[in-house]
Amino acid sequence: MAKDREIRNIVFDFGGVLVGLDKRRCIAALDSIGAWEISGYVDECRQEDLFHDLEIGSIGVAEFCNEVRRKSPRCHASDEKIAWAWGELLTGIPQEKLLRIAELRKDHRIFLLSNTNVIHWELSVEKYFRCGELGVGDFFERIFLSYEMGMVKPGREIFLTMLAEAGIDAGETLFIDDSAANCEAAESVGINTMHDPEGWLWMKKL
View 1: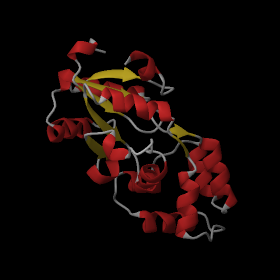
View 2: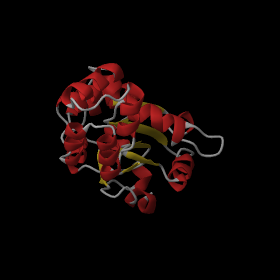
View 3: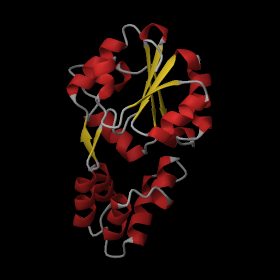
């Protein structure tokens, strides 16, 4: 990580760094609607097939839910119930994190770059990016989401695209992620990184 005085831009990951994740809660929710085969994906942290397709935006929510029911023949839940169960992976964003981002934005350009999907993102915008009268747009100058960009970390392309579209210099940018592979990919294009597996290191360092 570069010295603080050299950093003008801070790019946050979403899952694990800002929003809490609870795999067991998500598995229980999927099991409760009969999607046992899909809860196995979550338990094994598998990202192929329908999860990956949703994350890069190649399928929408309706197609995702249809795939859940196809792969889990005993699941007859509605699209809304399936979206709820998948959303149970997220546990919320601590208010102190949002307040700290708001403080950091006074002196830095703040961005978000996330591998995520429309279900988790819309849930978070509605419920979790709330701090008093502040909403998601008050915390970030730009938001880069895999399902809108059609690319995912740790691919180099997503970092290069972010830098170009945000108009920022890699050497003046700090990227914070809970994945070592994602940090390594960011470093490969010249971005400074902070590997934060628990999502609280940046609160102590920045």
